[in-house]
Length: 130
Image (cartoon, rainbow, N blue to C red):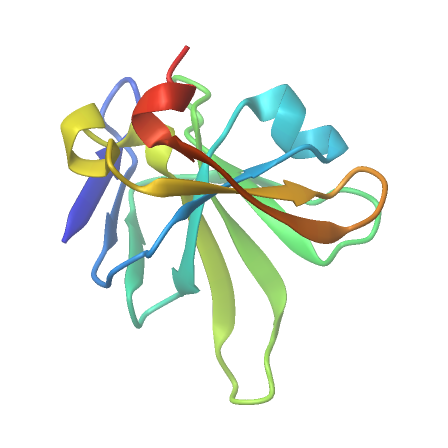
């Protein structure tokens, strides 16, 4: 199980599955936030605890969830359910202990222009810390 917490410790997440990889996205939100995501479903393999404040931008398809005290971005949550009634969720692994996620390969996603998977370039999370 992977765990993450915001800077002040009020918001925590757990991820109880094999994430397989982390995603680095270049969309207007993700590049500003500087996040690396792993994906799951709320209440299944992803749990978020503590007070959060949400921000949903223009298309209102998902909301970004922040700690209201320290401002760390902890996760995003889909604002609708999938065909199986589940809510998609991603957590920001930059809030995890670096050693617990260091070896995850990084998938790149062009969310800015083409909205397509760009695949891997051989880097892993430990290569993206700086």
